Amino acid sequence: MSLFNRALLIAAFFTFSVSAQTQQCEPWQGWQVFKNHFISDDGRVIDLGSKQNITTSEGQSYALFFALVANDKAAFDNILDWTQENLSEGDLSTRLPAWQWGENSDKTGEILDSNPASDSDLWIAYSLSQAAILWDERRYSILAAVMAQRIMREETAYISGLGLTLLPAPAGFEFKNDTYKLNPSYSPLFIYQQFSKLYPHSPWQQLHEGSAKLILDTAYKGVSPDWVMYSPAKGFYYDKKVPDLGSFNAIRVYLWASMMAEDAPYKKELTAQFLPFLEDINKRGYVPLNTYATSGKTQKRGPLGFNAALLPLLASQANDSLVMAIQQKLMVDKSFTQTRYYDSVLNLFGNSALNKRFSITADGTLRPAWSTECR
Image (cartoon, rainbow, N blue to C red):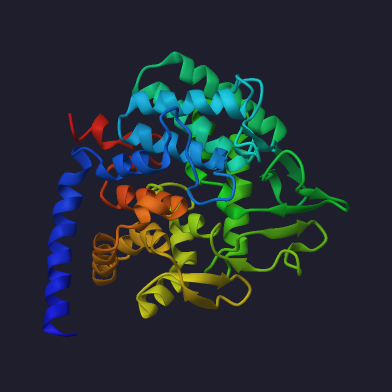
């Protein structure tokens, strides 16, 4: 390594150390940038550059979480109101939000795909449940409980050999001969833990166990797939339509695992499972774009958001030099935070987790820094 590059790493390390100690209590600049570039005045998260200026329930759900972490109640309510009015026909308690909304040929906004997405529904319900506690707002609590009940009723199935399982949506993922298409990244285990605590008379703990099995069993080579097929006769398997590729979906599996408390159930098992992937990243110096679940092979260079998403997990393995190098790259090239929605989301999650802007306890309770350290 040249003296110049070494100096840059030292400077990055100093910046990282200071950031980790002070950023958690300062106004969240990253959230402000995200709001300015991706969220309309009426609370709609826009995937810039998409053909129909689309909005997804995913974008709305993540923005609710970020607004809560930022202690930005005005933005939270704005995003919630738009979601309820436009994706749930005015009432989240009676209709899970449609997955996709966008502009038609007349530039009029409408629902493009009415099928809900279960991961987005989980994140909305989770953010509402935590907002109810942190901001002492009873209406959030009621809405969260009703949504959680609907998720359990409409978006889960008992699958032989797997147990209670989250389906990606109410329709379109269950096939003949008891065959299912599943997505490991749809299941942040800490949300199930929290719902087990908040709603003890519903089978959230069963869903937690089945989801942990899904994540661990499909990542036996150290990397997670985007999608996987399952049937009691075959177990987990792949085919031409559903290959073992892991990329834009799977990147979230590692992110959600890194956000879990060290003493949370399955945290040690997940971290150990992903060690081969972390070792590959260390050799490469960056996070790959593609992984292959059956072989563990990796391929190509991932976007900056992928690197940001893996920061907390890399830091947990004391991989300081790589963390510093990625941090430096993210500080130098910030253009994606103004143009690329998904990379920006991964960046906000990864850096806010790394810098302790929030933490999540073993039972899934959200602890934003503003509610504890910054008082």
